Length: 220
Image 1 (cartoon, rainbow, N blue to C red):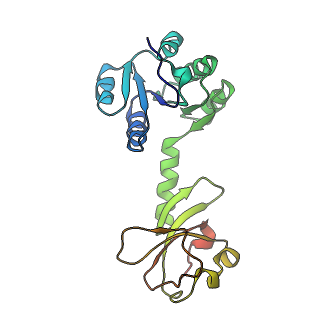
Image 2: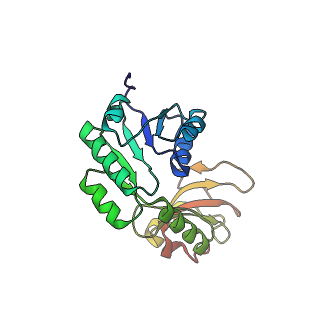
Image 3: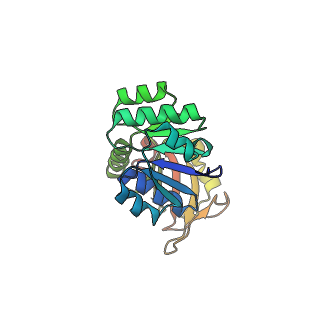
């Protein structure tokens, strides 16, 4: 079987998470190759991904024949089978795959995955729960960023700061915040990296990065 060229993403396990990830990567113009032992899942994936193969990923020879060692990154999403994900991760690293990300179901599972060479271990359900909790607790939250403890991206609507510039407000020193984009009320597109001398207008939407404790309750 002919190997696929480098700089592609491989996804092993085409369940809900694997397919959602593959669909999202394709929306970003990436080449994505999926593998699953279930023919129905492979049939569905073939309409979305660049390529999809029916194969047993716990077979090291099959992984080698499919050229997974040449992918820039492989994501292992084999449901609740700890044994499968551990063996597949081990085989991928033995074959020389440069980067392997694996979906885990417990902290003990994570420990074993890291011991056999996983470069990153993820908990999608836990991450989704944290994102939802943050959005419920912080109105206006855009995203919960994995940049440190409680770092968030939040929208603020300008009222009291009308007529002032970002330079005058000095938000970085005053509040430990950074404005990354501004959207004029009624418009759809943000202006990224806004000028420091641009006077703010009432109703402007500021996209601000900072710690949640500095953003919650802030009245702009």
